[in-house]
Amino acid sequence: MTIPPKPIRIAIVLNGQEFICQPVMLPFSLEGYPSVDLVLYGRQPEAPAPGLTVNPLPDLSPEGFDLILDGQFLTAGLADFSPDRLDNLVTGPAARCLKTLVCQLQELRQKQEINSGIIMNAADALITINSGHVIIGYNQGAEQMFGYTRTEALGQDLKLILPPPVKAVHGDYLKRYLATREPHVLGRQRRLTARRRDGQEFPLSISFSVAEIQGNLYFTAIMRDITEYKAMEDRVLQSERLAAVGNTVDHIAHEIKNPLLIIGGFAQQLIKAPGFDDPARRKLSIIAEEVSHLEEMVAEMRDFVRPPPTQKRQGQIMAVVEEALELFQDTFREHHIQVRRVEETPLPPVAFDPKQVRQVLINLLKNALEAMPQGGEITITSRVKGANAEISVSDTGAGLVPEVADNIFQPYFTTKEKGTGLGLAICQNIIAEHGGCLFADSPPGRGATFTIQLPIEETSPAAGASSLEENRR
Ligand code: ADP
Image (cartoon, rainbow, N blue to C red; front, side):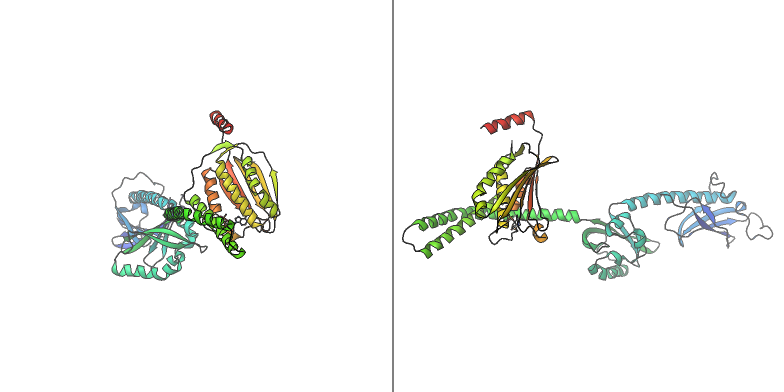
């Protein structure tokens, strides 16, 4: 970063008397310090020339200097320097003093540049406030995190970036620290909710430090946006919870599977047995239906919590699509549903588990059927897209409203009276296990489309041979 030159004011003190000279240009200036004063202490070698208050700078014998930045004493030097630079600035004995000063300033500037480079470019946000709660340091990380530019933030009260609950009390925390010097939060890592310029709140981790410089206290906060980390943490927590739920579900499913089988079996037998009137038979059919629904639910729950291992092999996925469609043939006819096939591009063989992919297709077709109680059309579209084989199942039902679309793949999300909400979650897991993805699209008024993408893998000759063998078997 190039800092433009800036004049410094030089005061010369001779025999305890102070004289102010012309401003002197230094080849640089220090960012953030508007006023730089240099006090030179020296002796006049001889009486001042008549009419002059002070001898010209080159004639002065310097004894030392103080450097005062922004009214604060910063550094001092002694007049014991070798004069070899900056001859164009001043000459003679006073030059020595000035040269050393310039060297020191340059060193200081370099250190400052390194430090401010580190601070400015840090990915973490660094904000420094003074004891008046005013922002005096604000790096790029803070600009990105909070959305205020450095120019907008510097000189503002820290309240600018504090969310409401903290805003009300933060000034008091500072006052308490200034009064008691008891560090409650200093040096500790904490989590807070902060607020961006656009009002969006986000979690951050924050640590504080304090520095005392010439009696003034400066507080620096180092902040890291932990939105992603928090999301990951939540996912881990969620998967731990799901694992626990999974064990319970697995256990319950195992325990109730056999009793359900027995109840369902007996109900079926009794329906066929003589001696029951119609109302009794109707009740028995309801029992049998409900039991079979429960059995389905239990099976889905087990599939979800304990999915069977995926056994992929190369094959024609459209063959599985046809198998699934065949299962629904009669039902579709009964429900006035037409099926249309659109082959945009022929699909090459892909590696997949036929049983699992059939399960996915059955689920998508069942959902499409349920979405069109008055009948409609199902379109199966196949195409190659990039490195994937794509199969879409579109219906002409009511489609997905945004609140539903956002949740359909969440386990146990259902809008159906007797739904489990597990079908699409299981389908998504299955397709993910294949290295592909399943997604939904629902343009307003045009039903819903569910698309399966499966990667087309390069088949090695050996893999090709083994899949041929498997197909033959
Ligand atoms: P379930 O069918 O047991 O509800 P799913 O996971 O298969 O469970 O589906 C979740 C929800 O997604 C359904 O309850 C429904 O609201 C919505 N949904 C799924 N497929 C469609 C579709 N083709 N059209 C409209 N909504 C659908």
